[in-house]
Length: 399
Image (cartoon, rainbow, N blue to C red):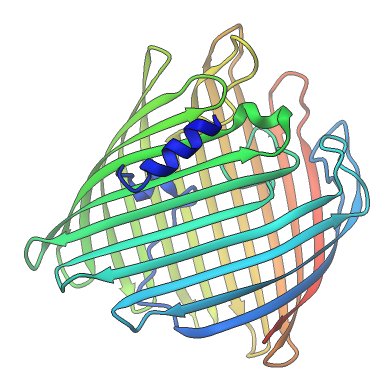
């Protein structure tokens, strides 16, 4: 698979990918531009308590941990080339070793960057890159069936080109490449990559409302198990509700070709983000697609269909200039079917509510408290699911 990795990396800029298919958590598009800021640097340190570091019902182990690191960010949205980046380098140290990986120290590293370049007033190019190397959390990277232990390399590279035809019509092509590689040998059967291509048309009905249609192809390349070809045709809309609020949606049909079988699945993406009141904003998302995650269960045992719902809501509330709160609620439900090798249908659900608070001691120093609860339920034979509590507190210093 490593040879495929380098080949795909080389081809990423030459293949087109539907950008909508890249995001696991589709949200409504932002309205307007975020604030620009000069390069700023930060350091962070947190201490926490995890009641189930192995994310297991039969192997529960509680442990305190320390997470620390530093980072930097920059954003310039006022120039011709709109550029932003963010990175962090850190590590997490548990006081006990994981029973699966035998490790107690994990990486906490990430890099994200984006650029938007306007060739003229009628055509633009945009690109974004995200790379992380860290343990896989309960609810991320498409995993619902189980939480992989050890560090995971996760990357996503997207680029798109948009060309106006007239004052109302425009077309676009999107390109990208993403994937996951696990550090622990026992999980590398779920190493996977995605290469896609897509083209779309957009119609501006008014200053606030736009309609779109798209056709995309995605190739799922797995280290073990069956690869799949996916064709998706969809229509959608995006609407600005006010200067800082918007909603969007699309509905379509996905055709998945895997192991000489063709599976038709509805494809749905909805997003809503709104500033409800002064200091209070809400962001929600809903998505439905047929994926190809954790479908390999051993030699001759594969699931051909992995229909997954993702639903979530995130809320932020600023009580005062110094005090703010965040609330989150996420649900992921994966239904596996069309199993080979006597595999029976199974359904896995991950439910994760969270809450956080931050207090600004000064312009440079902020304190945080965060709590996350995870419930994982499955009808998989021999797996009872698990619950998990994770609470942490820490300081962020900006300089």
